[in-house]
Length: 281
Image 1: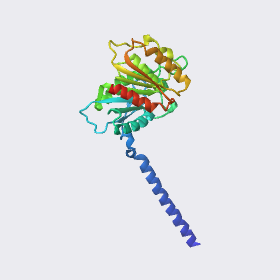
Image 2: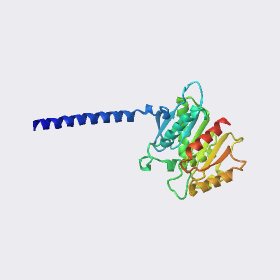
Image 3: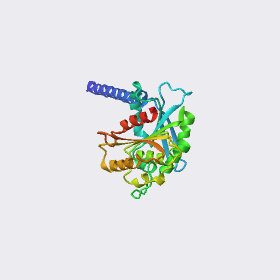
Image 4: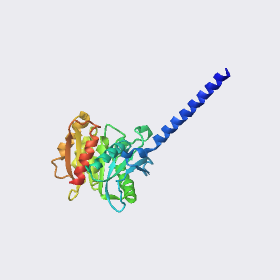
């Protein structure tokens, strides 16, 4: 009996030691993001909005061989909690074959997908809509970019103020169009992927809502996936048809239909086509 008891105790102890060892390995691996080389060993900062005290998380990827004495184009990714790891890893591969210029990547993240826990994209990225009472905070978010986020990045990193790009998909694409229309000088390049204009299209095809410059200098790339849902695709195509032949716009415009791409699958293709067109032409 005593032998059996001691044998069971030894087995239990061995199991506990083994379990602790496995858990220790798992935890160490999960916390070691350096092994995810595609993310570029991101740097982190946070910015608090003076308007509403919301916290915005900034995730920054610097080019390989980053030189503080240089000035790099910088692309700001909306919905950065998801778009940063996607685009950063894609950019990592594209640089192997030099298919895209070097740039600084800045993801702007809410840190959650849940509006109850602080994801304010429906407020921040949208113009007003009669269908959604909480829409319409784009002007405040644009001001946060202009007065806080952009100056912070450009004071801390070798970011070229005259080569800023902004990227957004869906309602984040709506914000890209909003800022291209209302403050076209804020960014050199704008990339709007599958812009969601289904609840407030009239604002975006109203010439009175654009700020016209003496000579257009910023670029605007707008794309729509051929397989996108009709509620998004139809208004986006109407926007393209309205503006592509308009001479009184404050940007150089390029529109693209991305064949066989849907609402989310279009993101990488819109990123590379838009970035290459803006930075290499």
